[in-house]
Length: 270
Image 1 (cartoon, rainbow, N blue to C red):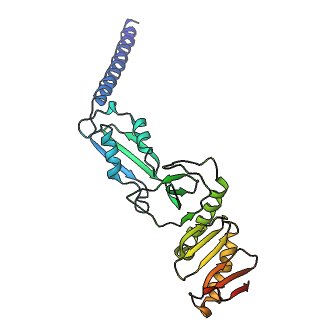
Image 2: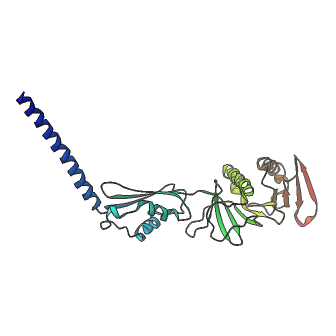
Image 3: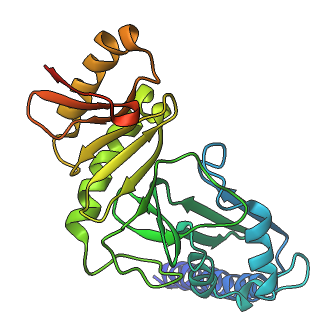
């Protein structure tokens, strides 16, 4: 009996010693990690080969501007949430993630916004992505996108960044138009500019030819461009690219054209 008591006591003491060791070791390790400096900074910019709004060098400058440096900044002193908020303030940053590991590596992962349209107003230019999010143009990069100018029916404050509380229906229709152009490589390459006149009618200025294509409203876009495709295929080879001043797609099942110098109007039933 006494022998069993000694064995149980020994096991209890051994177990207590192990618990004390792991607790002490964990606290010591934690304190050592808290005092550990940043060993390296890594910046990952997603889709950087296709979209170049944000560069790793710019993000590294933001990190340095927050007082974070390799070899000197202590891990426990870094507020990752605050740093994310700072980086997210960059116009073209959709979302950022900042995280640390035990080796002292600070990683910053960036997802950029992908614009589908450029809107040019009297107060400045803006990009719009598929979610209707607007953000100002940036100086270091200008992607090839359809440009909408003229009488833009929106009140966009200078330097605005975010979602507009008004104009959502117009923006939604222009988004659908932009998505159509993005999907149709030929028409995307043909589109030089989209101009909005005082009546809200969309005029497309093509890259080839000396004419304007009158789109009308941003509705039934696929049907309108189907008519235009037929016109380009069947009529332009007979007349040449310079024959017409305007090609109007607003009318149902027909195209109304004006020849150069307003000599003769021509209707083409489709």
